[in-house]
Length: 164
Image (cartoon, rainbow, N blue to C red):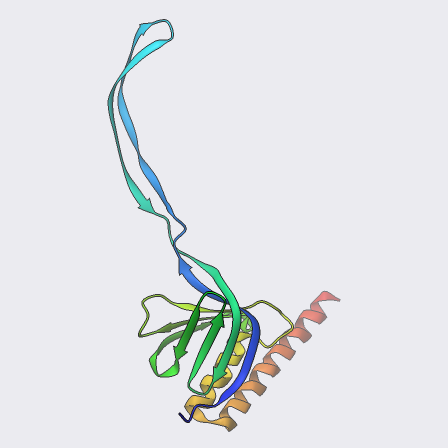
């Protein structure tokens, strides 16, 4: 109620921290006795532990993201996710907004969105705009969008000068 949708971004990927498996670490010790040519007998022990590999940020689904003034909603083929601004704990926006990783208080692990197409608006920039709308209103969001646009134009001008 009272929520207003501002953007819909198609072809976006859902990212989550996922396990990359586990590995066995350990070793053995003992002694081998030769019984006959080509035949040995080994006495000893083996000891080790199963160790979980570190989690990695992985793409787990693709779909669309809807950016409102109260939350961001992802709708995919396998998963649906919601990041409610009132439960937002942390937001990490990648370079040029290509990805946005978000932590909310009602979920243990961070998850986020990654742009699948570099010609569209990016999830990070859109997240910044709608969060600004929710916190400070439309005029502040317009200023934020103009500031981001200027930063990107300045970065492109620097890149094009250094390329020549």
